Length: 64
Image 1: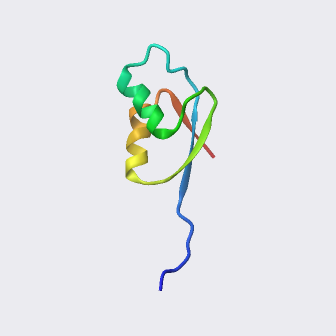
Image 2 (image 1 turned 180 degrees about the horizontal axis):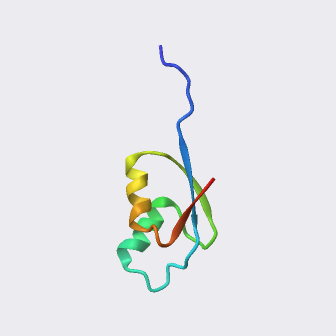
């Protein structure tokens, strides 16, 4: 049997513009689903997502 449990989630908000950012950082924002300023997306909290956030930490914030 599989127990039902909630996965930990993390909310990420884009706080800085992507203008003049390197292409790889723009692609990282796209992978996170962040396309506009002040947009908030929710993802499962796992090492992959944490790594993406770490690459663009200067452009995003974690929202509680």
